[in-house]
Length: 237
Image (cartoon, rainbow, N blue to C red; front, side, top):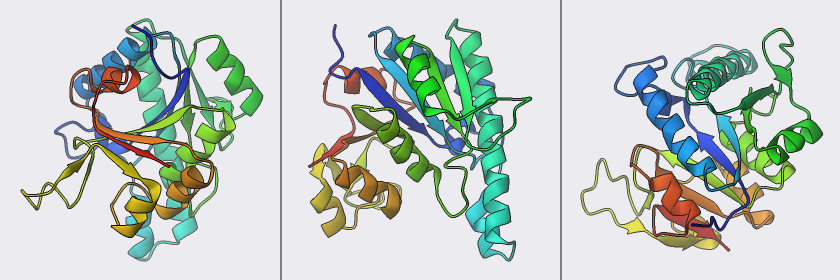
């Protein structure tokens, strides 16, 4: 079957790597995520990944607790590099070729982010994992994902979560919460739906970049999105 997209940006939260653990990286969980990515790549698409660091370090929380916010955010960026390396290692075990590019220079560990080089890797069907957010404090990894998606010319930004999509309310708290299949950018703003931070969301809206939100732990969910089979929630103009 043919994917409707040629190039995608997959946004993974750091928390997705924890599994049922309280923190850190759960190897079994990472392995399952990588299997979903491998299945997606077999559709002959180009895949870039932006990963968060919340499973290791939550910069915003510590910033609010008294630590200098910029310092906390830089520590969070380093946590995303650790997650990127863990993801790359798991990909090696299933014969996926990937490259990690960091927005902050750690030359002995990963490559620096260079847009042209990233696009060349994607053209060569290598998976590119973007780490360290935007390289600047005060910006979330959601914003980094939106920015990188536009820089590489992705057809869609796909946000992996622990729930099945975008709901009218928190499905963990409200059993009557309605799952939306498709919503517009204007509807998300009007109903104050929780998709991602406002900076990232505005970037996507202004550039007319569609956003898909889905459950990364649901088997074949990523493939369904790529094959235009109803799955999760699609945000579009």
